[in-house]
Every structure is written in C-alpha cells, then in structure tokens.
Length: 368
Image 1 (tube, rainbow, N blue to C red):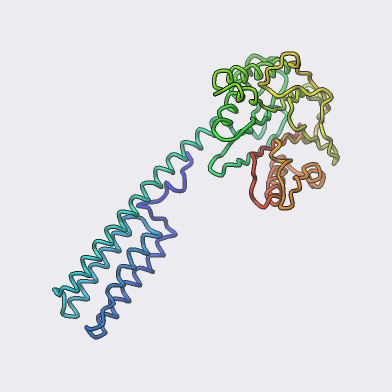
Image 2 (cartoon, one colour):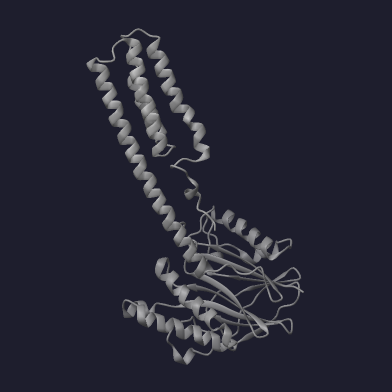
C-alpha cells in the first residue's frame, strides 16, 4: 500500500528537519555561555524563548516540548551561576518561559493533529479516485496504451474527464469523455458513465448499442439527481467510443460531440473527424439518437491519440491554444508512454505549468 508522505512523519518530525535542531540548541548554548560569563547585571536569558518558538516552525510537538524544557533548565542553570535563582526577576522569566513554551507546544500539537487528519482524508480521496479512474493497462490485446490525466483542481486526482478500456469479443473497446462542469458533481457523473461502460462489457454489445446504453444511463442519472429542470437541460457528456478489432487493421468509432482523435501514420498526422457525429450523451433528443459508426484504418505501427478539450484549449500567456497536431508531427517516435511524457512536458511548458481545465490524453499503438 502506498503511504502518504505526511504519514511517514514521526512525532511531526522528518529526517530532514532533525539537522535544524542545531539552530535552537545553538541559541540555548550561546545564551547560557553569554549569561554565565558576563556580569550579573547583564540578562540575556529572555532570548531563550526563541529556541522553542523556532523549533515549532520545523519540528513536531514532542521536539518543541523538549527544546522548551531544555531552555527552562538553562534558565535555572544561569540563575545558579549568577547567584540570583530566587529573585523575582528570575522567577518571572522562568514562569514566562514555561508558559510560552507550553502555548507554542500546544499550537504545534494542534497543527500536527490537523495535518494527520488532512493526510488521512487525502489518502481516502486518492484511493476512491483511483478506484473510479483505474489506470489503463500497458498492454491489452494487440494494443499498447499509455495515459495522462491533469486535474484542474490541484487537490484532486481526477475531475470531469474520464477514460476506460475493456476487452470484448474480438476487439478492445475504449472510451474517453468529458462531463460538462467541474468538481464533485462532474466526478459523480463520470463515475456513472464509466460504470455503464464497464458494466456492459460482458454483454458484448455492438458499438452503437453500448453508446445507447451509456446515453440512457446518463439520462436516468440526471433525472434522479438534477436539482432543477435547467440543470437537467444543461447536463451532457461528450465522448468518443471506439473498437479496435483483432482480425484486421481497422477500428470503429462513434463520436458524440467530442474533439476528434488524431492518427499518427508513418509520420503524418490525420484528424479523424466523422462525417455524421452523434450528439453528446445525456441529451434527450430522440430524433437524433442514432449513433453511426465511422470506420478507419489502424495499422501496425500507427499511433492513435485520444484527448479531451482541456488539451487543445489550453492557452499560453498570449492566449494561444495548444497546437496538438503540430506537436505530434514534431515527435521523433518511441513508445506510447514516451509520447505521453513528451506531450505532458510540452503542454505544461505551453501553459506555464498550470492547467485551467481538466485534461486527459490516451495514446494507443497497435503492435504485434
């Protein structure tokens, strides 16, 4: 099981922070030596409070308490050497040091407790997101696959974009889609669509029928969850569903209002735009519910790039869109994962390291 980095902390302290203990220890030592070897009229022991205060910035409550206790002990040592341990001034400084050290330690304990809870919540969220958007297999049938998901919400692993792959009789079936909207509602809608896609795999439905099934699933879901009629009318999913057949260098595709895939064939990039695209999923327009299948050649050595609009609509500082076809044409070749890594780095370079919309890429190569 993967462990969150926050959970590897012991007492709120990491290995890298241990070296920083030299700072508060140095303060305690410097103040002690200075006060011991200077006239009694000079009082620097009030600076001892800096030791636990600085410690709390990098160490946990335990480390802060230890430094605070050490500082308090040094206050006593200084008082003994200066012969004024029981003076009112010395007692006031000692009490103030104990109280402030206690407060700093308490605040640090509360911060550590909050961090642990937040880490646990994030771990659960990541696990749930990985269950929903399972990593695509590197190899399925005759295909090699690699994928990339960039969520606009930096605290999330996924958003409203989705992809999935399953095996059916004589083909590998894939879907990539984009739910209208963002946030938890979009994640919930994406889970419904992926569930419908995966759940029907065992039925070996023809391509138009699986698209009908996902369309009906989204309509049913929104009828039972939409807050009002307006939300119902504005809810939809764009998607590309395709079958890559085992018995020939061909593939079938249904495009439901989604950005068309790109085919890289012998160094040439082709846009797989369909003549008669279907409407997005979840729109209740019975007259338009036909889902025509578009056939295209997909030969050994070809590379197919599926993507969501968050990729091609990503802008640079001057407002220019990301030129995906041109970037693909400039690629020097390699594995699907190498192409995903290349596009990932290039996309972030184009946007300055930040994406404003969820973005997904799936790269598929047919191989022997």
